[in-house]
Amino acid sequence: MKFPGQRKSKHYFPVNNNDPLLAGLRPIPEATSSYIAGIDQILVDIEAKVDESLITKYQLIKGNSTLIDDHAAHNLYKELQAEKLISGEFAGGTIGNTIHNYSTLADAKSVLFGVMSKNIAVGSYAYRYLCNTSSKVDLNHLQPVDGPIGRCFTLISDNGERTFAISKGAMDQLSPEYINKDLIEGASALVLTAYLMRASEGDQMTAAALQAVEYAKNAKVPVVLTLGTRFLIESDPQWWRDFIKNNVDVLAMNEDEGEALTGFADPLLASEAALELCDLVLTTAGPLGLFMAGYAEESMKRETTHPLLPGNIPEFNRYEFSRPMLRKNCVTPLKIYAHIPPYMGGPEVIRNTNGAGDAALSALLHDLASNDFHKLNVPGSSKHLNNGLCYSSFSQICKYANRVAYEVLAQHSPRLSRGLPEKEDSLEEAYWER
Image (cartoon, rainbow, N blue to C red; front, side, top):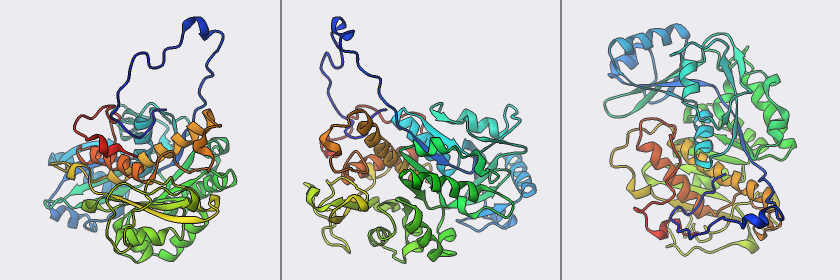
């Protein structure tokens, strides 16, 4: 488990050397591991730059997600190939991307539940998915199915707007019987996407997700939900508010999804409103940067040394050096907020906006799992006296999530091929403080 936090550091010899003569007398116990579990609609992302006439031809909603049948997907794929419009094919899926990036950052195990084609041919969609998923992601519990996995076409218009066409294939056929109770109960967190709740009649994905949520809640494992698209949320916002309040501990969303859920266009106010439904909120807001909101124990609050920020909640970041806690673990809960603008102003060229929010969430999950890892291996540490939810402060998590999102924005794939560098000479030491 690599730990999050300050990346720029110096090491002096010897760092971890132990006297070999004493090693046998004082054996070092093997570290107990922690991991994240997630459920996803297994699919491949196919990215193409297209004219708007093609979006109209396939009756897609510009800028949003539309489900298409296998026949339409086959024709669309053939047309994109014939016109040589495809710019990339990547392993995809909201949770698949998040879990992969978590394992890449943490250099640690994660577990993914979903379906996978029983028979896999070289060059097929399923083959591409497996080839582009970290070896640290445990795929041994995927449910084998007949037929293709899902396909998500990301169609990029001339103005950069992205329209999504999703062919389900067999991706929603996950059965509750393939949700391993022991693995859910042993995880540091269970990660879900709102898309899992809209399975069609006859598909069992929603039932499987709800089964996993029940296992997690009974074992007091934090449930993390990332919202999929504002149109999914605004179709029945009250249903989603009730679902989050009854089942979710950590919520990830962008500013549009936050507005659909809470009615507030301001991401700070949307984050505050969402705190009435859950314990920790991560909100990405495009060029505005990233917001966090959560709870800390009043007596454990830590005041920031950064400039106090204006907003609809004046000086809202005053206690951003506090560590997140579950509200139920606070004697006197205090709402905490933090914000950070885009890392280095954002990439000079934004190559991909698909997956930046998932990348930010993977950083938050890394910090959450690191807290569990530290608690398991150093149970007597004073760091765990207040039963914190995460290892780092709100401020530090913002910086880490912001830094990881930058990496995805600067590349074509929503999946990281490597973790962050251990030393970053382009950064001032102050960036990673606290």
